[in-house]
Length: 305
Ligand SMILES: [Zn+2]
Image 1: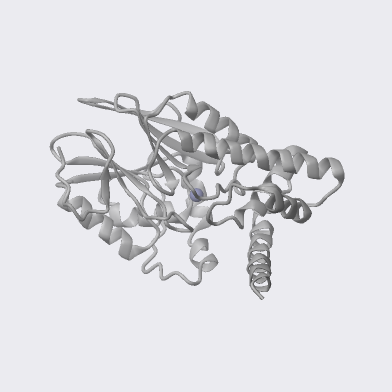
Image 2: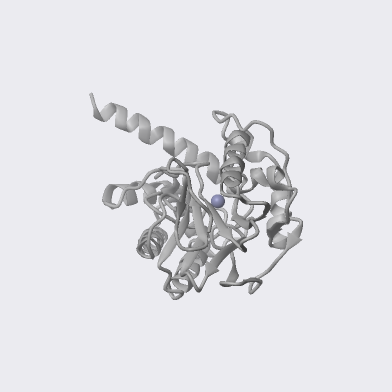
């Protein structure tokens, strides 16, 4: 069994599963899962982190845990989860075919979209071993199972499930105390994925962002996304636009989480889901989200006068 130093950022979840948490889980503060595959030091990481310096810290933390052979699985293409691939490229990088394509397509876009963050060296590195829904790795203590969801958080999301230890690594399909983000996937698809994940009856859930917890966070994400869908439906039925619908949502919603500028992006995505729109412009909606964020901080400032 891996031994943990008392000051380690790694938390033990079960006999063979661990998480490297980055709290509170805001933009580019994602979690990494660590699965001990055997006693000889073979480890599977579920995702990497965004910044070179933090990836090197993660690598050092793994070395203190006697990890020898480190493979990585990417849950989805976003740079916060995949920019560290090159740090671990001496092992296998697993991911779906679509995720591999999207990593190449996105390149280092995230670096330009988050100018306030010093990412260090970024060498975009797609998965080298393609896997799909139903793939599993057998270990002496049980299987490591992979489930793929299409159009949930992104066009392709993998979750990792340890049925013998009832630990679930959701990637960004689930969030804990952090606003979900379905802009690049689908609100309805995210809801369907979360409903399926609930049926696994996980004991421990490692979300993409936010603290490790139990299955109640899946319900919390479902409640949020269903409410987004209700408001989007109402908006469409009453002729309100996305901006007006987001204003109404924020006036009436009581469950406020961090990074809630994502509300307007999620409502825009829900409008598109409900309308079956195939001309959805993600980049334009990201710009609207920035505008929304600036507007709400201005509004807060005026409120204190
Ligand atoms: Zn993501």
